[in-house]
Length: 546
Image (cartoon, rainbow, N blue to C red; front, side):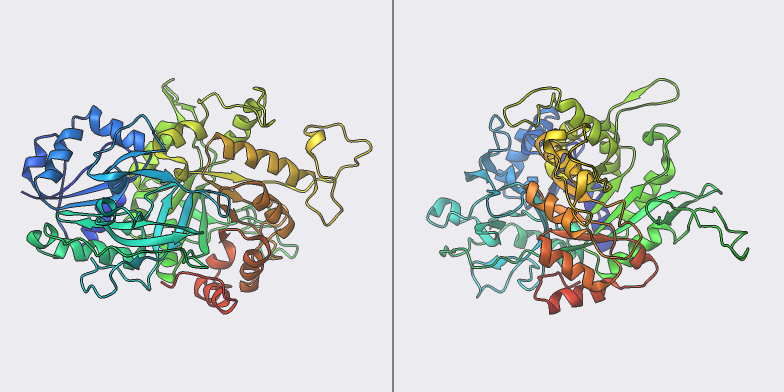
């Protein structure tokens, strides 16, 4: 008897397990339908696509037992997909039938006035401000959302509105952030990825008595209309490039225009260290430090050249597991997310590789070279929009199908190349923008072709690097960032070139990107994350306060 966690076989459920352990709560996993009868409280941490969740429940014989458990009146806490499955259906997977406990359907965000997925930190607003029991929620805090589909707040429909507990606004759309009625409490955001604010939500629910969890009263129904501005914040991301040094240890390094080895000194002083991999610290220790300093998200990029399958890279998997035990914000992992073959000839799909990282504690995976191959292949299959058609086999498509597009980041690495329009006869000739020496250039335009392609294949976010600006400290390539931001309707992360806190203000004000990433200036403590956020707040740019 006691607290159980429901794992339907997809997504990062390890992070919730780590969070509960940190908070001092014991739990067991639902491993068979019979376990529902043993549970006195149940948490369903859903990460992935609606259809995959329903299929996973059905294939494991858990669908009807879950419905029966909720109907029994015992406490239920749903997270993300764990909230959405309570509804009748979702436009994400029209052929899949939800539990139908809430008599409404999950719709999709419009991307006319904003990027989709809704990926980042946002605030919640209570429907009953006079209520004292807010399940640990704080209207002044920010919580981490990552979803393309949402439950609209239908205040005109009493049978739906009675479930509403709090709302969030993204762009001009108001949707349900939390639902609560009787024994059911569920949230669209991820409390296990929402820092201390999210941990308080989980802890408040778990420290209340089981009778209190099972007897929530409906929230009064009130009208709610969009405000002029939502509570969505800009994200500051700390990135760690991880690779083996010459002694075989995994270290965080940083390159200058992608060269990660120390440069030879001209006076012989640096001769002993010349050519060694630049060592800026241990990845787990740096991840913990950046979490404490207020980073909104962390990236671990494995830049080691794989001699074997990433599935055999146990040191990197150990790093992911250890980092997930110490940080409670989103974690993106990159490197080796592709179809591979073990030395013994055993094949592994990119989906399998990604799944292993998700199970270790990652929230998103970053794909680079494989995305280029996928777009080149797509362009051989004609389509009306000129981008081509995917065939459903690429890493982007297979991972997005199983886990949702919000789990797939594509890292793009353009370099400026200037060509003469009168003589150029290379690839993408009809799509190039022949810029001036200070303009985007061919590299940027080919990058646009790539990002448009991966967006169509199912990527949920673009990580936009710049080989020319990497390690220079000259600021982000604003022309490049703005060009890509205008070209896609999914979130864009600006990377490469940050040297001062003012560069972050500049990239947000002049390009409209959703996030900005930096590495070296954070590793060397040249600029603090807190300094960056203070500068952004002073410029009236909305940021999360840790």
